[in-house]
Length: 96
Image (cartoon, rainbow, N blue to C red):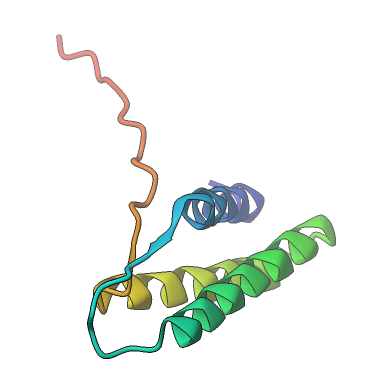
C-alpha cells in the first residue's frame, strides 16, 4: 500500500468516527467542556492531515491523522466518548 493510500485510509477512518462520535453524558468526574476541546483538537489534526495530503506531504499528513486517532482512542479508553472505527473489509479467499 502506498503512503498516499495509507493516508487516505486513515483520513477516511477519522472522518467516519468524528461524524458519529458521541460524548458520554454520565455522572463521572470529568469536564464535558474539556472533552469537547480534545475532540476539537482531533478535528484540527484531521484538517491538517487533509491539508498536507493535498500538498502531497504524505508523511506530515499521516502523522497528523495518527495524532487525531490517538486523541480519539484516549477519550474512548477513558470512557468519555463512544464510537467504533470502521470495520475492515475482509477479502474472501478461494480455498481449493
